Length: 387
Image (cartoon, rainbow, N blue to C red; front, side):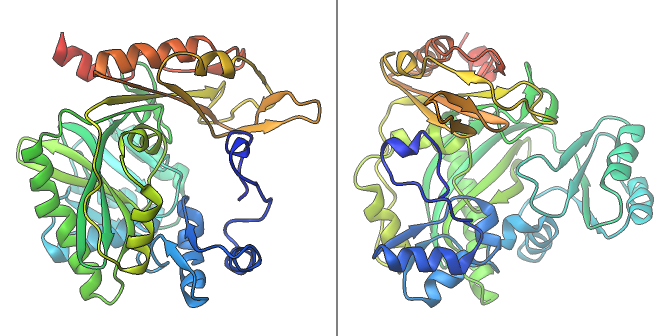
């Protein structure tokens, strides 16, 4: 709910607001649903998981209180400070004038973050004082976090958490910027691949030990235990992994990249986390995956809607390719149209990073969508390392 033409091939889509806790519970009761999986951050912050649990329905996803790990960047930074979790130095501000004054405490580049849900786009990495001031003026009066810029390479680490216990799910590397070479404004993500080879087993273990596990313990000790998937955006600095931010969901396009690698009954695993049962880290295939986002022209500012999309079937005839839908809609004529910013996630699975990348782009090239665009350099850092 509400779904799209992609998932409609496999599931019944119901046009109900997923941020309406009462409506979600009523729907689950009407259809005798055993398990609710809450995907987006909006319904989590709105308390959908709380309402489902109160109704006695198993739900995978954190409470509204625990979802503040994503819902408020200031909340997370304060938790890191209390629990000695490595992250960038920061200040929290409540108004534009306060934010401008706080800039004096930081060197350039500096990071300006809106303190709230922003669909992955409420962050400015300012490379000049003028750019930092412009970002603050654009945000206006309201809570913000200003923080030190961290040098390094980003990676994403996903963990399944049930109270104070956390186990590794998978790693991925996202490409947030809209342009080639990671240039231009931040987006919700233009592509990803899994595993993130730069996040070595040693760094992954350190990130779990120093960042994810202390977070789970701190939340449990505060009386707001986290249950669900905790997605840690990491910066791999010279001093070790540091937390950039948390998401309390699988995230796109990382979800599309990691899901094909998970072996076994994934619904059974989610149910175990939801009800507080016994569970272990899932088995992962040793294959590589890559996801390339096809977005509407104008994204992330003013995406063009209504463009005709053809060639999905041709793309999925490429070996190992699946095309996931995001911002799509079905016209009454049956035509597939673009209905949002990020429109498709073309995902490929193969026996190596290079082969997954080649397959993903063959899939993208099979799609006919004149109003769309995509990056041709997803995985460029790994390509450089392997060349």
